Image 1 (cartoon, rainbow, N blue to C red):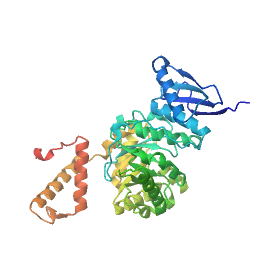
Image 2 (image 1 turned 120 degrees about the vertical axis):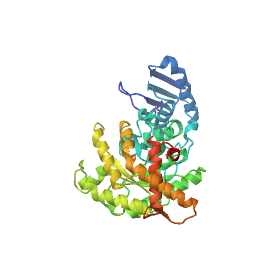
Image 3 (image 1 turned 180 degrees about the horizontal axis):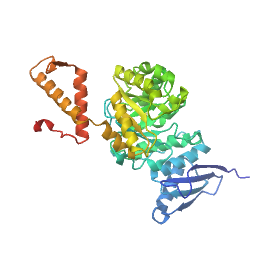
Image 4 (image 1 turned 90 degrees about the horizontal axis):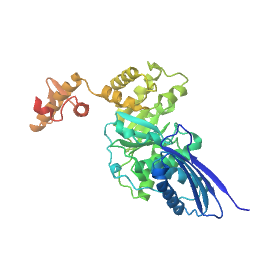
Amino acid sequence: MKKIIRSSAGKRGETIRSDCYIELEIKSSGGIKIDINSKVKSMYGDSIFNFIKDMCRFFGIKHASILIEDSGALPFTLAARFELAVKRIFPEREKEFLLPFNKNNLYKTKKDRLRRSRLYLPGDEPKFFINAGLHSPDGIILDLEDSVAPSEKDAAQILVRNALRSVDFYGAERMVRINQLPKGLEDLKFVVPHNVHVILIPKCESASQVIETEEEIEHLKKAHKIKNEIFIMPILESALGIIKAYEIASASKNICALAIGLEDYTADIGTQRTLEGRESFFARSMLINAAKAAGVQAIDTVFSDVSDMEGLRQSVVEAKALGFEGKGCIHPRQIKIVHEAFSPNEEEIEKAKKIVLAFEEAEKKGLGVVSLGSKMIDPPVVKRALRTIELAVINNKILDNWRNEL
């Protein structure tokens, strides 16, 4: 009696795009048989066939029946779906089928770079990956946590790994939100070797969770000879996390920001989230103060109504007034509004110009003290003014050579 082992991976149906569905049957004889259903079979059928044959050789599969229902999947998706189908049958096979690294994605990041917007993308939905960078978010978050169903966690790990290698992020900071610890530690091996910039730790409640994550990152960096810096962004989503905000913010030099997640936080304290936000004012203020005390950025929660642009604008203006430097986005249309609302107004720009000029004049004269009129200017004020000018230039409110226009 022939032994047949079956598995499947991916998505199928008329509404599916930029994805595929694969059924794999392992047999004891008969060689490799591949059946491809695709609207673009006449153009890409041979390429898909040869690609799958190459993967069969890579994973040592000699006899199998394979069904592929293609809905416009790019190679990184096709490879991820087939690798998952194989590993659902042979979980002991640790080999990874890695596509060539996109040279456009070899850039690095900085601890203090702008993080006004970070766009969340579900880790098991490759259709959202492809053009996300064209919307110019400051960061793109490939999510392995809440947006991914438990049954698809393994699929998301491989898809996110492949996306980090293949998808052009167009200069956006490359972020991954891992699962809640300890499961999230397993996610790290799929992302650390592939030029991830920032790891987001969800539902973080202690410094020890940051340290545990950092130690695993460093272990993987050493094992894969990774030299680039990888920063950490804990997300505080509970009463305990907020109470321990400074402990968490100061747990590592690799923390670049603290973020807050209000959906889980309000549920944890037994209330409902409102537009006014009175129920979360304490938590947001605690997080901001902890972040500033530790010298890292404070990042606000997402605005969940993607149709309410004015509500979003008001939410960002409020967040900026409190001291937040960025906000989460769940739809590309939110990015432009977030950037505009975080940009400085004319009064802020003019004040910043005066401070910067006074600072530069003091430096020329070799003065150790900077003053503007009768007021002394501290280094943090100068730093904030320089960031205001940077934001004004980025948002085309002033020219990069603004000094020449004075």
